Length: 257
Ligand SMILES: Nc1ncnc2c1ncn2[C@@H]1O[C@H](COP(=O)(O)OP(=O)(O)OP(=O)(O)O)[C@@H](O)[C@H]1O
Ligand SMILES: [Mg+2]
Image (cartoon, rainbow, N blue to C red; front, side, top):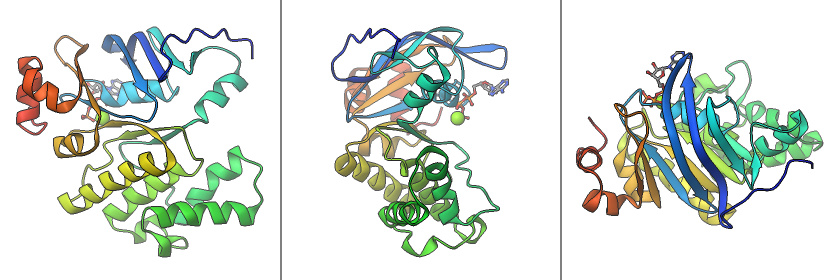
């Protein structure tokens, strides 16, 4: 590949340097500089509307920054040829906030679609992989069901299984537990922790559920709404004890502002 390597941190999978992101024509976050370390769970939190989902879409390479760079293993996610960008994006599995599955397809077909688009695996192997990932999230029996036949919690788990289906190095999750009751949200947290432990996946997770953050995140990145930039980055317990006042208040109130 022709893109120059400019990696600076050996254990960083993703490096974000001076990033500015816009939603529509409005810059919602700027001056973001942080790294995602290999094998960690990094949570992103902040008030509703501060730009968490927008940032996640930039980390996935789906939107172009208005300033700065996102490097994945030292390579700029938004530069290089289409093929080079596609190779980098393939290393990431994304679960969007709405967790949308295609309603016209069975759950199994939803999982097999990325395998059909991005691998040369034959059909029986695609099915085997899809069934394996469904089993991993406790949905062994859901292969032939339609998304509409699943409960909300099951749909979330199916969306997580789809994000995992290409064995991504980096899993980008937008509010995976939202809309779930506490036991199901805790179950989803356990699944994320499980895939980190057993598949070595690096996880970036937007969450407004501080229970989740304290349960599974190694570090928390806090995005501020009024200053439109990050105001804290560190282990959640540390930020709760010694972070800036607005971050401590946010954490104390469980993510409600
Ligand atoms: N396509 C768009 N065009 C214009 N503005 C947008 C667009 N998408 C989002 N926004 C606005 O950009 C801001 C950031 O949105 P974003 O979805 O990133 O916030 P968020 O932190 O994920 O919020 P939430 O916690 O509610 O999910 C919001 O004020 C939102 O209204
Ligand atoms: Mg959001």
